[in-house]
Structure formats: C-alpha cells, structure tokens
Image (cartoon, rainbow, N blue to C red):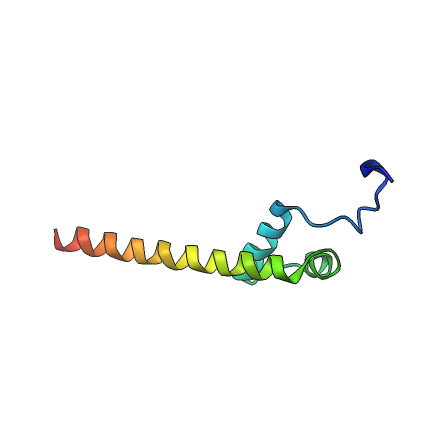
Length: 75
C-alpha cells in the first residue's frame, strides 16, 4: 500500500502533533478529539519521553529566569 492510500486514522502521529498534545496537556487545554487521537494513534513511550523533556526544559528555563532576576536585583 502506498503512503497516499493509507488510512489517516492509522498513520502514526508526527512529532509536531505529539508536541502540540504535550503542550496542550501541560496547560490543561487538550481537546477530547485530540486526546482520543493520541490514544488511538500515539505510542505511550513517545508521550512519556516528550513529557519528561518538556518538564526538564521548563524547570531549566524557570531556574534561569530566577537567576537572571536575582542577578539584576542585586547588581
């Protein structure tokens, strides 16, 4: 079967679709349609990995912002 003939309901999620889902879930605004799409077409391991990476990046950005603010306040 060629790529053009594949059922869109069975194709794996793209990286962009997974990133959108992780960000929406982090903000608590994930739609029911996207959530069901994620459960039917996505792999849990991919979402877990992206969630952990997003959380780590978020923490690093918060720490950097706090350090910058403290540096500017004391300088």
